[in-house]
Amino acid sequence: MRLASYFMPTLKEDPSEAQIVSHRLMLRAGMIRQVSAGIYSWLPLGFRVLKKIEQITREEMDAAGCLELLMPTLQPADLWRESGRYDDYGKEMLRIRDRHDRDMVYGPTNEELITDIFRHSIKSYRDLPKNLYHIQWKFRDEVRPRFGIMRGREFFMKDGYSFDLDYDGALRSYFNMYLAYSRTFRRMGLSAIPVKAESGAIGGDLSHEFLILAETGESQLYYDQQITELDAESIAADADAETITQFLGRYYAAVDNKHTDWADSGVPQARRREHTGIEVGHIFYFGTKYSEPLGASVAGPDGSEVSVHMGSYGVGVSRLVGAIIEASHDSDGIVWPEAVAPFKVGLINLKPGDAACGDAARELYDGLRRAGIDVLYDDTEERAGAKFATMDLIGLPWQVTVGPKGLRGGTVEVKQRRNGDKEEVSLASALSHLSAA
Ligand code: ATP
Ligand code: MG
Image (cartoon, rainbow, N blue to C red):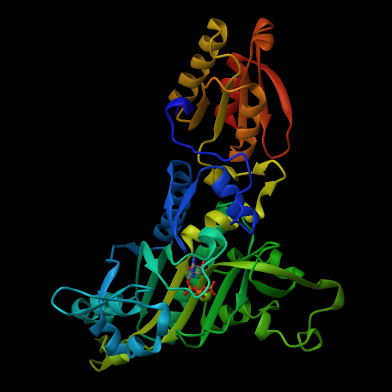
């Protein structure tokens, strides 16, 4: 991508409406634009990151055996009346009436809709287990939308739903998602801490929130340092219920209201940690809470009708864009983990008018693209200082600078954004260096 023809409306000044660093940097980097409170447009740079996060999530769900589908954003209110949540959900639910005076809602979540799909099609225990997910926009009319896209009203979520014949099966499905979530966040360069949580509005027996540590987190987290070293992969995905339950309760971690006193936690003094965190994912097991009222049952092995045991699993795809920035930035701007970076390489031509610089930069640009590397090529007439500042702001993992001085000696400069390390290398080795990196 050539910057001169790209659309990346960066800001020099800090926008006054942004209270936290990720919101500030997303606005300054031209990633998003607010439309109204808690509702944003995703501009090209932000959209690329959103899509990367979506794709990693999708790949990990697919690898865990989940099946992707797509449900609409608008749902009939009658489904929510069946579960009893039409009245319970309160003001966070956006209610709409169509031209025939039918009540609709903009989905804040999809338990009812997926259960409706299930009950019409799946009739036998032989078709279980099933885990269906989609990645779709949600709307919750939050009282206080804030922190940019981190607490939006319209936001992008991966929500998945599992269906099993009994508790043991459901627990395995739950643990399968627990593992998939750990992998998903790790691939995004995050270390997410699984915290046993209260199930809140959705209700149920078992629930974990995945939190990443950040100064601006809305939850206060208390945890045993050892939980960060927990290797979930050491347990077979098809382990029995007892092994899984034991594993899930192994190390202490609790948020705000669930934490009462360190003394009751059993965590030795030296391993106690307190930090604020951002919730990026949430998994629930809630048994037959929806399958019973909505009549989602299957014929069991002995022919009797059994209400299916369900779980639901959410990843805050759009929130993750902000959360990753909260976890990975410095005083100059964003520092993208490579897996989610909008481009891998930022190529700076210091003197676009100069023939040698133009040729060298184009050669690199073409070579990188041929190698399948996403590169943003700054071919604008801006002055050098502004170009460097913009590249640091948008945080691409690698920067390559082509300038007349270096070219006289046949070299370009390769800089790693994360640590600022710079190296003078030949054009050819810049290409192989970045292809290998
Ligand atoms: P929170 O406690 O932050 O309000 P929640 O518990 O209501 O979130 P869930 O129903 O568990 O949210 O939704 C799954 C995921 O969707 C959350 O873990 C979070 O990452 C994301 N999410 C929830 N609400 C919002 C929002 N208003 N804006 C952006 N992402 C959100
Ligand atoms: Mg939650």
